[in-house]
Amino acid sequence: MSAQPLSTAIHQIPQAWARSAPDAVCLHEAERTLTYGGLWREIERAAHWMQAQGVRAGQRVLIVGENSAEMVVALFACSLMGAWAVGVNARLSPRELATIGEHAEPALTVYTARVSPAAAAHAEAAGALAVPLEGTAGALRYVAHPGTVSETGPLAHQVAALIYTSGTTGAPKGVMVSHRGLLHFARVSAESRSLSAHDVAYAALPLSHIFGLATVLMATLHAGASLCLRAQFDAGDVFRALEAPGISMLQGVPTMFNRILAAAPERAALKAPRLRYVYTGGAPLDPSLKRDVQAYFGLPLHHGYGITEYAGSLCITREDAPRSDCSAGHAVQDVELHIGPLDAPARAPGEPGDIHVRGPGVMLGYYRNPEQTAAAILPGGWLATGDIGYLDDDGALFISGRSKDLIIRSGFNVYPIEVEAVINAYPGVRQSAVLGVPEAGGNESVVAFVETLPGVEVDLSALGTYLRSQLAPYKRPAALLAIDAIPTTLSGKIQKQSLRARL
Image 1 (tube, rainbow, N blue to C red):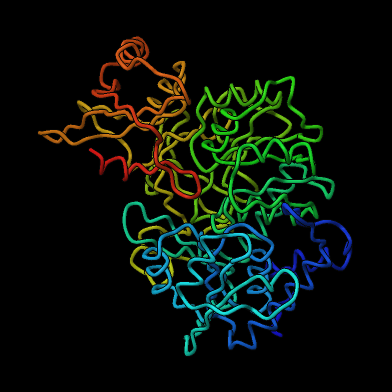
Image 2 (image 1 turned 90 degrees about the horizontal axis):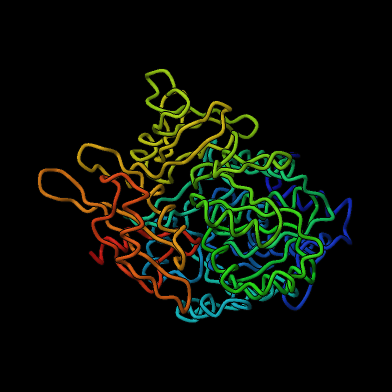
């Protein structure tokens, strides 16, 4: 078995706890729990089995699934062998899976058929066989792909995972996430949240997404804490899990918190005896959502900023200094930020510009895509995030939006997040999505899609009148369009490309 030296690969996190606290609970699933010792035994068995199928270091293993012990086992088994885990959400379509598979060229594809009907359906269509192992890994199904080429050279042992972007604006890109970056952020994240072995974190965010992988899985296991693992997000289940096993860490994207509040029982009926930390990331934070979450749970709603191309969050609000605004917080240890062009001094506080980052979590590149890698990783090791933001006088980061979402109206810059925040504060509105529509002469009009709370009707004319009192003329939407549900990716991000297609 090919294992790497101490502290260089992600599997060494559960391995260390299996040695020092083998009986400590690691994973809570709906019907069972798994200890660190039990998890490590499953990881070793799965790694030996993968090796018997011909998987070698530097090869890719496609893991088609939803959150489960099997997915965790497969991820760390890949690390133990030096293979690259390629986690993809089983709710992707057959076409989307095929596109990723053709690009990654895995030596092995495994499916988490026990917990995921979608994964079971993909496995059935592929003629997958049952993995002949007892326990956790035994619920996997697989297809072997003989003759796959192994990556060689420095990258072969540096890459922990390939994470494919959602591909809402084009073909998905495989982000090469490093062991070094994940290990660094696991420590930084655990420390920033004061995580300990007594904590229980809720894990419904897909482990195939950087938020679920780094912030939820890696940080929690680094602290020797346990995960309440769920294949899919269900707001009602959140309240049951708050009571038993007793979630202490509740983390999710903003759309998850919108749904939690929509399903919330009366404040007096809330039973969350151990909840101490609530956090959102993965998308900009809306002031009205922050206000409502804090009022309901009676705790600060912490926030952070991260992207797929960086292993974990770049910025996190400080646990001991909750903020009254919607800042993403300060840069974490060893992260450098530069706002604006790299060939000029950084922008002054309050002045927005392109966000560039440098640090140990910067991706190793886009797999098999040197052109796009060169466009993203700039001289000096700086990563162009594609986001726009600014720093305040204290060095805290505020996100203005994606550079590609910036709207130019009558020569002025319109940041959709600002307009969305005002719309979302209006009574009855659940969430909104603002985008620009090209007009003659290179101008853009502002259009807003509006989703209301269940059972609530919002007078869009009255909303338009309200916006005239809250926004400068060039920021006001030319059209307010009602929509039953704003489309999101599997990780909870709004799909503006899908909304553009509607127009």
